[in-house]
Length: 329
Image 1 (cartoon, rainbow, N blue to C red):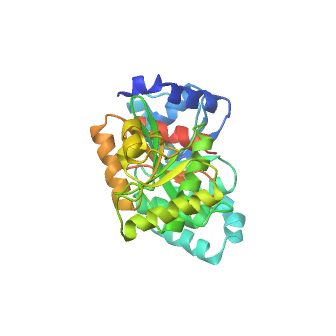
Image 2 (image 1 turned 90 degrees about the horizontal axis):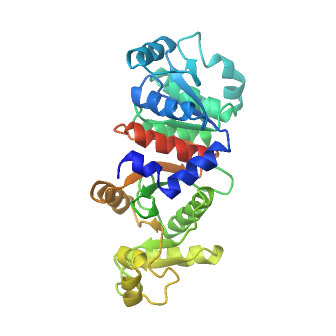
Image 3 (image 1 turned 120 degrees about the vertical axis):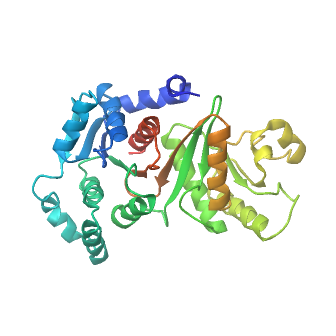
């Protein structure tokens, strides 16, 4: 599925229409990257969001000139002018000593733009931040975790991918952050996904995935998933099932054969993987072999929308991440 056909899908059209009514302010940290600049211009030209980019003003203008890009509607935050963190000294002073030490360390490591982006988000100058086209994921996520902080009611951060297939929109979680979540953490990841699905105007039907469906298998890993589903059901009215295999979660005929009393009826759209290995492997396999788009990882559980990109992200990938970031703000 190419990007033009993707934009014509009812789901993506609905998201763009919802964004048009919100007038959100999104900051792109790596403004000197041509992919990031093109993605920002996509939104500015269509007046879908107010876009700011950070970088050397001179380098960004030269890049736009070389690539024949129109920067009208793009706010360039020139980090080469004076000391950009000076304006945030009061904000920095209000942070914990650990956070202040982290800022000093990252500034010394050359991550000034990333820190500046976090501070602008904390200062409510923008509604969301997207970065990671240049910065490694480890560096990006650490800044988000340490500076943005957890939203009320969240014990940790998790992530999800939106899998945009030809005829389906699915959520895969957690495929980027939590390595080996406990039953309690799996239940919380599912709860966070319900919130995210609601923000994206999606109904949620949760499948806690396993190599076993119902009582067909046994063992520690199966029990972990079973307990996660039980914990989730105690506090949430959202339909869920677990342990359940992927085929029984997504196909009606298979569900009728394997687990006929399941509330999912083969119609799950939110898939909670038992560990990072299975989640990350599966989303990449579906992305490469299924012909769809994987948007993410989208972080959930933070106070404010702050999202990472793959350093191999295409312009289209960045556009979709900006779109989801803006809608979650």
